[in-house]
Amino acid sequence: MGQIKLNQVSKSFGDVEVIPPLDLTIEDGEFTVFVGPSGCGKSTLLRLIAGLEDITSGHIDIDGTDATHVPPAKRGLAMVFQSYALYPHMSVRKNIAFPMKMAGVPAEEQQRRIEAAAKALNLTDYLDRRPGQLSGGQRQRVAIGRAIVREPSAFLFDEPLSNLDAALRVGMRLEISELHKRLATTMIYVTHDQVEAMTMADKIVVLRAGYIEQVGTPLELYYKPRNEFVAGFIGSPKMNLIKGPEAEARGAPTIGIRPEHFDVSTTEGAWEGTIGVAEHLGSDTFLHIHGVAGCDPMTVRVDGELSVKHGDRIFLTPQADKLHRFDAQGLRVE
Amino acid sequence: MATQHSRSAARLMMAPAVVLLLGWMLIPLTMTLYFSFKKYLPMRGGDLGWVGFDNYVRFVTSSAFWPSVMTTLIIVGGVLAITVGLGILLAILLNQPMWGQGFVRILVIAPFFVMPTVSALVWKNMFMDPNYGLFAHLWEFFGATPVQWMSQASLSSIVIIVSWQWLPFATLILLTAIQSLDREQLDAAEMDGAPATKRFAYITLPHLGRAITVVILIQTIFLLSIFAEIFVTTGGAFGTKTLTYLIFQRVLESQNIGLGSAGGVYAIILANIVAIFLMRIVGKNLDA
Ligand SMILES: Nc1ncnc2c1ncn2[C@@H]1O[C@H](COP(=O)(O)OP(=O)(O)OP(=O)(O)O)[C@@H](O)[C@H]1O
Ligand SMILES: [Mg+2]
Image (cartoon, rainbow over all chains, first blue to last red; front, side, top):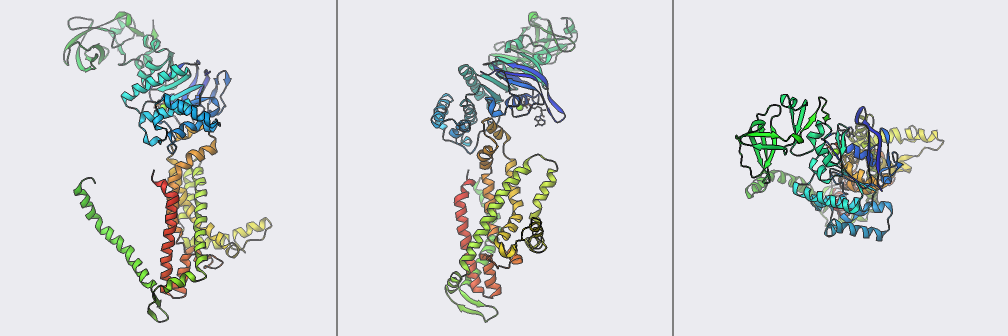
């Protein structure tokens, strides 16, 4: 059980409205990702759901019952914080046991759940250490362990991987996804990293300045972004947005084309440009191309084996069926 | 200071300070030790020669010795308990967002700037005087007989006065410590189902451990030698004679420098016993 429903929920700090009234439903068992630029209100929204901040107006239903005025501990949600928020003076074992101790779980049951969580998260050897003696990834796992043992109806993650290095982040991303598959519990995950959002989510909620710009599956957002903001935010490298005569010629004030949707040639094509920086990733190469009217630089993704270099002339043809068209307000037109 | 070279340079640079400090410490200490083995009565014949451990024996066997040690410990213990307890409470209150926070903080710190002699006089005359003190009026207002603070509750009076002086120090240090507590830890504990009292016991208090240790150690050093507060209030009467005060009486009132010096050596020993004892219980907080 873990359906969360926000009805016209808003939040103001003093006179500043950080979250304008919004509606959102998170289904039971769903992995939902809140994504958006820094300061757009992702953490605030998560803290509203957790009950750590009071809602200015509207109400929150959890599993069909109004939870607006229920204190955080009684909502049956567990949260993993960006700073991990482990208790520094307690051992890993005590950290994990803390929520159960507060809930009055019998000692043997506590022991059983700690062992199970430690085994699942590879923490068995570290149970008697203090958080200060663990690496970042291990601390992260302790924080997750502390959340798991409560057997919550939903997990809330606030940028849990942002303090980890790139390699570890990929590993932990998988672990969290596997955890979700195994527990099949609702998870809400906040990030500003669109790769994390794309790879982990069942459903992505794109936020900007407190407004929900679009809600959908990762592929819906990728193929049918509702507006220019979502188009630019989802996908890596970013979608190229082209304005001016080239766009008008294709029937819209602005057109968008993803770096991977070009036909590239050294002899002929619709647009001609010069290669600026070429980023070789091995499998792919990202070319930053200058000189195309309406979009400078234009990012293009080509096969890693194509041998081109800085200063070369190159011709691009956008794949017509992969074009995105946006009207003057930035909204998608079909 | 990683290399050999920079380390020896550092030693050279620090040498003058170290020598000065050693001299500062060693000369008075040696002189105290020197006089403690002499019969030295400035007004009654001056230096009357070596007497061995005579002064030491006389000082401990005097009927005033053990009570004075007890008084010292009671005052130090009482003040520590009050300042740490109230200090934590005040620090938590001052950490809450409220109107006029800056002003209230200055008010709380103010007593620290009042000289001990002055504050003791103010307390003695303005608050604790049995005829015209504020407390006397308060007691009378409720129909009670005013307390003769200085004679009936002499030790408590001194503990109250000294606590009032040291409370700002404790509050200040504990406040800075509380401000460094990670908010997310408290949020996490709240989500984990800990009510406010348990959040205090399991998160805030352990976080304050180190600051409390520092407060206790520093205050103990100063509290073992309080003098002015006793001098201007009871003058050592009504069981308020601390070890420091006893030494003062031996040296200046009885004009017996040898005996006073022996007392001084006992005071050093007592301070060390207290220090070792404290380090044992609270010192481990400083390691982690
Ligand atoms: N306690 C507060 N008082 C006033 N304003 C706040 C408070 N907390 C957050 N804000 C404001 O609310 C807005 C949203 O903050 P929030 O922390 O939710 O952003 P975020 O999307 O989580 O950003 P990031 O990705 O950087 O963590 C910000 O503009 C921030 O300045
Ligand atoms: Mg945030």
